[in-house]
Amino acid sequence: MFVDFILRPIWSIFGAVIPTRDTKLLLKIITSMDLHVRARDIRENVNASEIISTIISTWLPLPTAILQTVVSFLPDPIEAQKERVPHLLAQEKPIPDELLEQERQEVTKAMVECEADSPHAVAFISKVHLRSSGELIGIGRLFSGTLKKGMTIRIHGPKYSPLKTAHLSHFEIDALYMVMGNEYSLVDSVPAGNVFGIGGVQGLIVKTATLSTTAVCLPFGRLQQFAPPMVRVAVEPHLTGDMAQLREGLRILNVADSGVNVYIQPTGEMIIAAMGEMHLARCLAELENNYAKVSIAVSEPIVSYQETIVDSLARLEMEFKYGDEDDDEEEEEEVGGYGGAVLIGSDGEVVPDGEKDVKAILEERLAPGDIIAHTNDKSVFFRIEAHPLPDSLWRFLQQNQDTNSWSSSTFTQWLALAEEEGEEWKLN
Image (cartoon, rainbow, N blue to C red; front, side, top):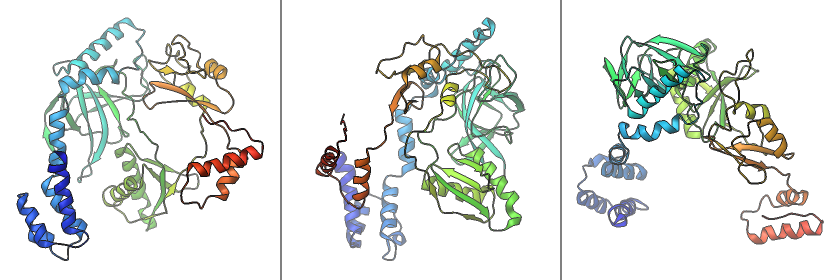
């Protein structure tokens, strides 16, 4: 059925346009599919790819398809939060203070039940958008309670702890918006379960933030990135007098896009690191046209490659800690076990959850050249062995670097060479 109703019409459209254009067949296809395509969109001087895109987007428009899929398959917020919230809060550690812990349980229940009448409002801002007026709007979802214009709300930083007053700020909500595509409609209040926009966040939110009316709400983790930004370019203004505007534009770009890294090298170069070429192109266009509004010069892209595994024992230990991590304060006690994570030892067995001394575990179970890595959600930790390439394999690769295709026979040649030179190489 999918072939008959989807693939065959697509093949017919391509066949009528590529490699030679058959206007009569094309018009017949458009008529049979009851499409409203303007005659000027399929003229002889129009590019073939543009004709195909016009016909297919008219036949199966992407926005409509996405909206119908969301409505048909995604659960409503009331049902979704029953499954979503326990995962979001899975790494939370019980608060030592009994009264605070009891209040935190009430907040969790309100979030799970999506209670709009709860006094505990909790929201997560996932991105920041710059409007044409120059106003920064935080966009996020409200999990519990109701937000109202003029309300004072708390912003909990990534290291916020209910037991301390650090990493906390307050601001007054000066505008609330209902997000309708690219448009924002002003509203007086937003109940739980809605995606909304919030004004007054200038200088207060960087990429993401946790908003709450209660002190016991722990901050949500940052959005997971399945790959670090790997394509880097250096930017500078064509006119030296535009340097201040470019710096301000880079600051806004860094706030608005959670997937980009903006930083300044010790040499003074201003660097943009993006997820890929398309992401980089969009960032540069936004920077030049909307954020900085100045003409910029961009260096050739630089792609970072790493030849081996690099990790920091100190950073790894910090990931197992809980609470404030300021240099002038002592670290909080470690989480019992690994906060719900599973640690796989060097012997392939799961490390018992009761073992708390992370450093001792690492020193005991890691051989030289080994590291402990983990999945993005830190639900599974595993050991990785790193071994240098045998000399014979390195030379063989150098000698055959121009080979267009590799096969099992090619690899067998290297094995024979390694055996001649007395090298042992075990294939697992």
